[in-house]
Length: 150
Image (cartoon, rainbow, N blue to C red; front, side, top):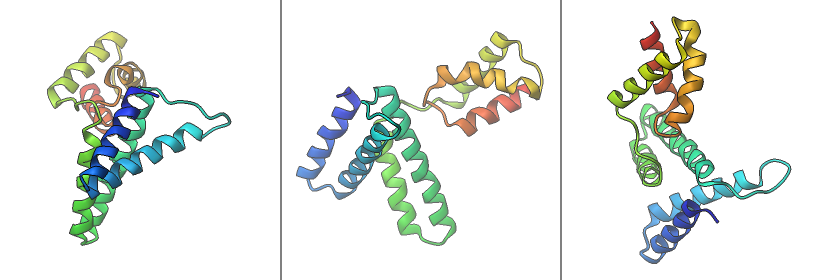
């Protein structure tokens, strides 16, 4: 079992013992998503820590989007719950890049690939993705690349 998955299980047990309903429900949901990903496809397999981080990132994004939808729908109590679940998931994700760090990485990738104009966006994104790996949301990265190439 991967270290991150083991940490999730250990923290779930601790949350259950302390009767922390929010953390318990969130970690159960996260472990279920990881389990579903493991059995998806033709052959069941064990996810690596990097793949578990991808699953958790996807789940955190779902929480942010749901919180926005509930805010716009006039349901602040549900929005607060979704935001709280997102914060629990954020504990297990790598620290997000600041705007300055993202801008620096984008500039390095542009220099590395020699891309110019909007047509070079794909090249830059391809070079950036391994360096960023879950530390910044794709839309945010794309916006930074687009503004740097404009």
